Image (cartoon, rainbow over all chains, first blue to last red; front, side, top):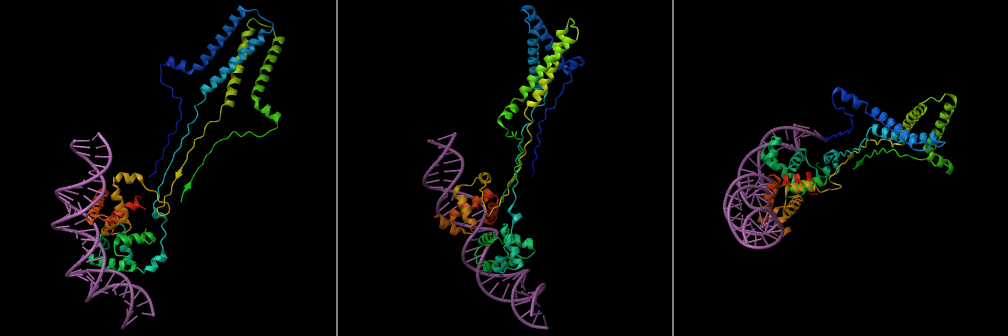
Length: 176
Length: 176
DNA sequence: TGGAGGCTCATACTTTCGGGTGATTTTGCT
DNA sequence: AGCAAAATCACCCGAAAGTATGAGCCTCCA
């Protein structure tokens, strides 16, 4: 099962639907703000000019001040207008593969035991936890036949019980 | 076998190793540029002032010009100075589990089954192929006790036979 | 302190398993 | 064709496994 998360957090500059006039103001918000700021600055400067003695290099000072302030305004504006940073997204995908994929049959041990085809079949079904009766049904043979197979199987594998046989078979990589 | 993908793409702002003096210039590049721009602007304005008739609202015009230009400069500066956008980082961790080599006990499944200590002990011995009598001898309890344990075990695991219990336990990584 | 759950054990019963023996049919190989 | 091994099936018996029920003892926890 694969879970793919795609939480792509993109800030769309969603523009609400206002009335026509208000929408216009919203649209030109920055321009208006800018104009107001400029007017305020000029007013301030005029006011200062009236208050104090105009020294020789007053213009350069004003120019510098304006430059400074509007540079700051520019920086602030661009920071505001810039799209927010994209967030970091970490997706951890864990895939558990079963042992069955890389099962290597131990041919040598299997050959050593000298098991017949049918016996191996029985062994596999036995290992999956089926009873003799269930195995018989699965293989379309009688219960007695399965018993015979298991008996010979145990004899060849030199074990006494099906659980031992399964344990041994799994340990020797004879069955998956 | 474990495959770990780590496509970690991070943009390091690698700074080349220059000579000391040049390094200083590089470091204060923006400041220097800013200063030069300001000086140039003032020079330009003085030059314009000398050339043309100073009209009544000349100052306001100059101020506006300066404000405009330096706002633009501010925006440009902030765009330049802003850190590059963080890239999306996706880590895909694929874990291949193999039973035989590195056994990792599946605590979650084990907890789900709600088996008692003794029941787990019995399950382990059962998986190694021992009969109930042998388990009883190993654990120094009576055969009947082992039978009780196995019964409850099968009930909790929702299986009918010891072979099924062992198969399930091995599949769920509850026992090695 | 009282109940819940775990561990122990017992008895009685049913089902499944495993061993033993024997027999018939099929299959593969020389 | 004939032999050996494999596969099939049957019957019996005892052992082991599993079910059901009840009960005593202990520990932990609300």
